[in-house]
Image (cartoon, rainbow, N blue to C red; front, side):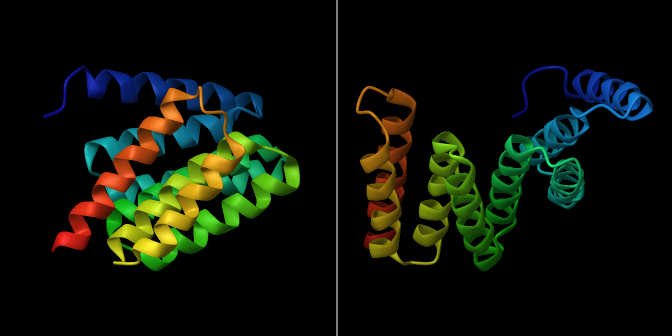
Length: 163
């Protein structure tokens, strides 16, 4: 069930995109990413992939590294939602590598969650656990968002092992 005014949200984001494109603003990549995320949430995965590809391409062309890793991680999430698990793994690993190059631990960890969940869905619990341990090693134990996601994915892994 979708709660909220999704159509209005999309209209507002598209208006922001129109303005940003006219101004050739760096935040165009972030707006494309937002449209991609909105479409993931709505289940419009082909449309989400299109916007996320545009976000990555724009961010790379503008050499905006933060938007690049953000959109790469979102694209990995989209592949996961589509069931394209090999592409999700590859994009998550690419995001982790690039995040390491630019020193962005947050997006490396966010991509690590996608990587671990992809491994769970591929019935590779050892690889999933390895990905989670890498996140635990680099993140403070006081980060409850991270801890909650680690436990969520470990729970998914336990369910998969019982099947």
